[in-house]
Length: 279
Ligand SMILES: [Zn+2]
Ligand SMILES: [Zn+2]
Image 1 (tube, rainbow, N blue to C red):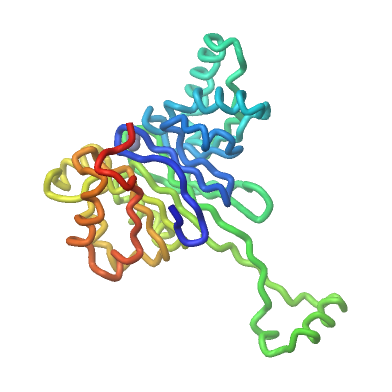
Image 2 (tube, rainbow, N blue to C red; image 1 turned 60 degrees about the vertical axis):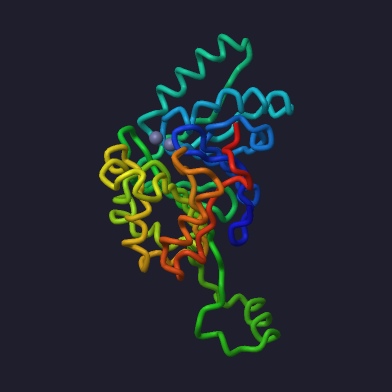
């Protein structure tokens, strides 16, 4: 699908598999299904250690080897799970007789790292029964300082050649990935309401699961999104990680019926164009 300036490719079904790639950013979000078209991504962000989000990492590494990609991918993850994931990959390496290697980068909430070029990644706290994080991708953009806005192009060029500092830089939040969490992640990290594209879980959508039951599993219920409707300033909101309680073709209809129009028109449900979930 297309989400603002980005393409998103992959699958997501709550508790079963979640793996989405954004080719323009060169990032794979979670590794819940070993799709061969996702295996060549050199940067992987893991939200947490549950198997519907990391279980397919070894298979993806195997597919990379088939593609001749020998350099281990950089894998960002909550710092607490680095040791366990590294140990698991070491055991699987023995089974495979081939190195299933990653460059593991542990992150803690609030920490920022350079991703590549003008892109940075920031970890934001989420709330799940195991260590978990959301990620915000920011881009450094340069623009003309306001005091020079009235100047004509040739004059700007001439002054810049003369060495005048006419540009200022700002970090623009491009995309956030928020999954497997209580809605509290947004209340504690209001910056998640702002990135241009927000990919978020909304596991439960209606009364088939109560809000209390959703909270007990540390997942988001649509009721909780609707309550905060006026806080979301994102241009595009990709909703995913829906429960198997809902068929893919039901999701948009439920959103149409329940979500206020100004929010609804910005939401794209990440669902296949079928009446069954993949697999
Ligand atoms: Zn999940
Ligand atoms: Zn989970």
